Picture 1 (tube, rainbow, N blue to C red):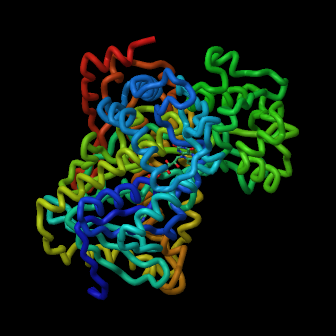
Picture 2 (tube, protein in one colour):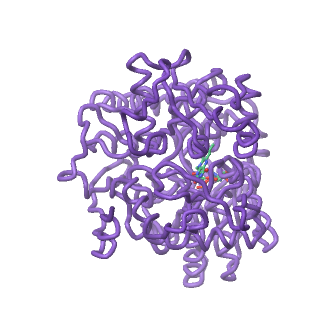
Picture 3 (tube, protein in one colour):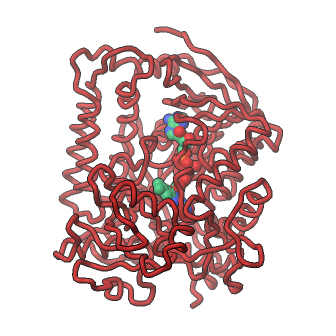
Amino acid sequence: MTTNYETREHDVVIIGAGGAGLRAAIEALAQGASVGVVCKSLLGKAHTVMAEGGIAAAMANVDAADSWKTHFRDTMRGGKFLNNWRMAQLHAQEAPERVRELEQWGALFDRTETGDILQRAFGGHTFKRLCHVGDRTGLEMIRTLQDRGVQQGFDVFMECTVTRLLTDGKRITGAFAYWRESGRFIVFKAKSVVIATGGIGKAWRVTSNSWEYTGDGMALAYEAGAELMDMEFVQFHPTGMVWPPGVQGLLVTEAVRGEGGILRNKNGERFMEKYDPKRLELSTRDVVARSIYTEVKEGRGTEHGGAFLDISHKPADYVKKKLPSMYHQFKELADVDITKGPMEVGPTCHYMMGGIRVEAETAQSTVPGLFAAGEAAAGLHGSNRLGGNSLSDLLVFGRRAGLAAAAHAKSVSHAPVNTAQIEAAEKELLAPFANTGGESPYAVHRDLQEVMQNLVGIYRTEQDLMKSLGDLEKLSARSAKTGVEGTRMFNPGWHLTRELKSMLLISEAVARAALARKESRGAHSRTDYPNLDDANWGKKNNIIVQDGSTMTRRESAVPEMPADLRQIAAQE
Ligand SMILES: Cc1cc2nc3c(=O)[nH]c(=O)nc-3n(C[C@H](O)[C@H](O)[C@H](O)COP(=O)(O)OP(=O)(O)OC[C@H]3O[C@@H](n4cnc5c(N)ncnc54)[C@H](O)[C@@H]3O)c2cc1C
């Protein structure tokens, strides 16, 4: 086996250059650590850049009555109390400071008339809380973090995919990766590794997620011995485009509803009056997604199988100013002028609440030296995330992960990397070239998306989930035999063979956890167990962990909330 790879050495290696990874990098640098940031796309092209609606933070600029306590309460209620309460508390308390910091670093937010950061309404938030830049908030956030980080001096390895974490059996020692362009291998020696690789939406057919979301970081952590938590909770955003077919799933930001958008069925009925008369369109995402799904299933959907979302009652100039991306998206892709008529929308796979289990204060996983933040980590959102709470999550826990990763790096020295692990990683990567005439990975990916869409979607049953596990096993066998043509020079089919492994592994974790949770809670809806079952499931997190080569599941008690927070959460 070849040992033909380059080696780099850093105190802290961060995998992922979205909001979580960049914020972690900035903090680790500030602590004096040497930092390498590895990302499989170009720097600045992470998923975070797509974020539209805003960052949730109780700044109280628009609604003076807002406070961290209300934000905490909204987050816990949105997550149906499965959240890690300490994460929800830290998040609500620290988000305003993190947003102000972003502003000091140069982010240009929309403003109130008195010059404060403007905040808009969003589903499940009691007050107007989302700090935003029109509907291009993620772009401004990533630009600001990137400028700050590059200026401070981290090393960037872009178009470089990590395929394995290296350990000495007890703690993290580094990571193995390959350059996407040349196919050549690279080994990172590190004292701490932060996973900030985002979610796994590309395992579903209809999704708002980009090609990067293949669950790599969760799979890397799992294979290194870390625990995954609450994998059954996959968020289906209520409003993705349903037409034309080529853009099905593309996100229609919740900011449309935040700015006053109204949902109607084909008969013109404002159906949210039936499902959540109090909050209407600003109900939580799980409720709105199921409402649209039900309207369509019961024959009241639009021509292309969705609902109408209308903002055309607002002045055209206002719509163009507050929702410029949505205006252009519909004009260019669907030939619809949203200032004059409604959009057609339907649910789309959007966000992963589950992920790597971490400690609240440090973002450290169950493996020493391995940290995780952002969408790759679990705990903050419980069974359902409120809109806007992801961008604030990235800032709060990205910073905490960077801080703790740097502190950990100071407490240990570099351990030698295990050459057997490197050789195994090389062998695994090169195997598809030897499978001459093997099946195309694209065919297996397409079939995986059908399985997850049809059997592990918005509504689930025991029968479907059992079938999905059987189907996933067959797909894994097919995946092991996929073959690729050509060379290691930029070869997307080859890249997909490795990503397929991650997607299949994490899809299995989702299906297993979904099968076990015999109740409906937040984003997890079982038609055979349609109600919340607080007595049996209200205080249990699902944990998935590797035992030898077997995926095992167990339950773990949700940490008990202290009395003062219980009181805050219970207030009307
Ligand atoms: C269209 C859209 C709009 C959204 N709007 C909002 C919003 O308004 N407010 C809000 O709070 N949330 C929003 N979200 C959710 C939010 O954007 C994401 O949850 C968040 O950006 C995730 O950030 P992250 O840092 O965890 O990951 P990302 O920003 O996705 O970054 C992941 C990084 O990991 C890298 N990576 C992945 N795998 C590997 C690997 N194997 N090796 C090396 N690098 C790897 C990628 O290249 C990338 O750099 C939106 C999501 C979408 C899709």
